Each structure stands twice: as C-alpha cells, then as structure tokens.
Length: 359
Ligand code: UD1
Figure 1 (cartoon, protein in one colour):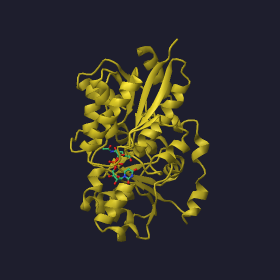
Figure 2 (cartoon, rainbow, N blue to C red):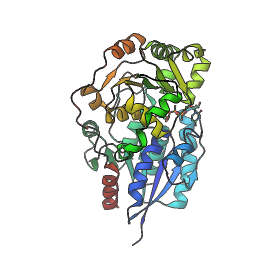
Figure 3 (cartoon, rainbow, N blue to C red):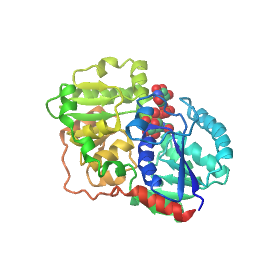
Figure 4 (cartoon, rainbow, N blue to C red):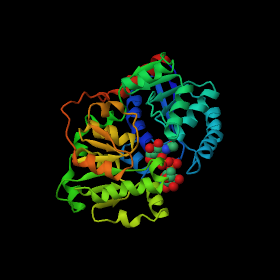
C-alpha cells in the first residue's frame, strides 16, 4: 500500500516542540510518510536548530527562510515559496500547529490548493483581534479541515462558530513530550548553583507583542521582576532583548533580582518551571507547562486561551501591571484542584489515528 504523504509545517519555537511529539507518533505509522517544512520564521540557533537537535526532530526537507519582517511580509514570502513546494511534493494533507504567522500562511496555502489542512491546537480564542496570534487562530480555523483541539473550551469555541464536524478533542500535544520523560527535567540543583541561587526562585518569560512593542508595558513587567521577593530567572527572547535596548530599559534588566539568560533549551526550561515558586509569563506554552508541573503562574497578558488553568486557580491574570504582579506574587497559593484539563500526554497517537482514517 502506498503511504500517504503528510507535510508538517513549522517555523517558530513552540511549533518545534509540538512537531517533536507528533513526528514521533507519526514515525510509528505504517500508513503515513512525513516531510517537515521549516518556514524559517525563527532562525537563531537558540530558537531553532538547537531545538531540532535537543528534541531529535527529523531534519526539514525544505527551509523557506522567510526570516523576520512585518506580519504581512512574512506571510507573503511564505505563500510565494510554499506554493512551489506544494507543486513538487503534492502532499495528501498538511499539518499546522498553533497560531503563528507560519500557521496561518500554511493553512491559507493548503486551502487554496485544495489540500486538506489539519490544525493542531484548534479552537482556542483570546477574543482580542489586536493580538496577532488571535488573527492567526481565526484564519487557520476558518479554512482548515481537521480540528484537533486540546480542551473542552476549544471544542465549545468551534461549536459557537458553527464548526462541529471533524472536531477531535485530543488533549495538548506538547504534554506528550513531558509524560514519560521525567528524568530529563529533574536535575535542578546543578542548574541552580550555576546561577548562584540557593533558595526559591521565580521563572519568567516574556516576548508577546503587546508587551514588547510598548515601553510602558515592558517597563512595568521588568520593574515587577526587579522587586519580587524571590530572584527571577529570565531567559530573554531576542525580540525582548532588542525592545529593552530600544526603550533604554537595560538598567532594570541588570537589577540584582533578575538573572537574565540567553534563550534556553526545552528540558532546561521544564526543569526551571517544575521547581519554581511561581511563574511569570505571557507564553501560552509556558502557561500550560506550568499547569502540567503544578507550578502556579501569573499571566502577563490581559487574557489567556488556556481558560481551564485559570478556572482551577493555577494561573492568575495580572496583565503588564507592576502592582498587580507584585500583589498576586505575595498571595501565591497551590490550589487543591488539578483536573488534568489539558490532556493525558497521548495526543499524538490520537491525531495519527484520525488522519489515517481520514485519508
Ligand atoms: C512568534 C509567534 C508567537 C510565538 C513565538 C515563540 C507570530 C505572530 N508570533 O513570535 O506566537 O509565541 O514566535 O517564540 O507568529 N527574532 C530573532 N531571531 C529569530 C526570530 C526572531 O532575533 O530567530 C527577533 C526579530 O527581531 C524579530 C522578532 O524577534 O523581528 C519577532 O520575531 P517573530 O518570529 O516575528 O515573532 P516572535 O516574537 O518570535
């Protein structure tokens, strides 16, 4: 029997993590053959190649090198270059992940060529179209054919838009990497002493446009980090590093309470998340990883699509507001309730089975 050809499209750091989990599940299929296409949206070693090595993701057959640009230009470059690949490869189905510019661009390409598109992480909504990721979520779900949604909220959001067919509640794909790999994220002591930390700490990430494109918002977040009762480990995304320089906020980043690092790998990040007193983040990925590890988190965004984690009290929304962050930081508690609302770590095999049946 001829295997069906699947093109998985990735481009930004969170997608490498999701692709690592799904590629593993797909490589066990006798019916599917996977090609990976990298858009080139992320190109720094620490955001891209390092993850391919660390997570043993198959090497992409193509890299479209779209790089950094405005959103429209990134998408335009992707559309131009991906068309040629679709003409050559003639895939049976495309897989896209999450809500980046790469995701939306790939979904449009597939829909325009009548190639079925499967959206992993479908149905999530932030209900704010000023958030670039929200626009990408809406575009992708408007044109895709298979909807793999991580949560019941995602399923309900799709239903509210009239999308009920081909919706599969699978749980979250990135948890597949965490379940069963505990030994890879338990060795904290070495990491802590390398940083000179001997007590509790907070782990922070921050890179969303709402904060990094606005001096006031970024300053509020950095001031909060500099004043928290615990040292703050902060791997700095290149976009955030450039914004700090542009806005002249380096002196806050250099405060004694903030330990600024270059971007770190996946397992190191899991190790820090798992043992932190609490997390400060605007990253959807870190929000759900914190929930998985049962570490409370304060969300730097004004809203989150991971509604379940907030409803159960694990995550609190502060927005980029120093006083609110400090206040929530003083009141951190570990909730009694944890319903594993984001899934059980077996998402990849469910997705593969649905795709096999669909094709
Ligand atoms: C993108 C996604 C975001 C995801 C994040 C994960 C969109 C709209 N946003 O945001 O949802 O959470 O990836 O990291 O798709 N840069 C580098 N090196 C790189 C890549 C980017 O220095 O390898 C810098 C450039 O200054 C660039 C800026 O970061 O202009 C923004 O990069 P971009 O890929 O557009 O968005 P992210 O902020 O990374």
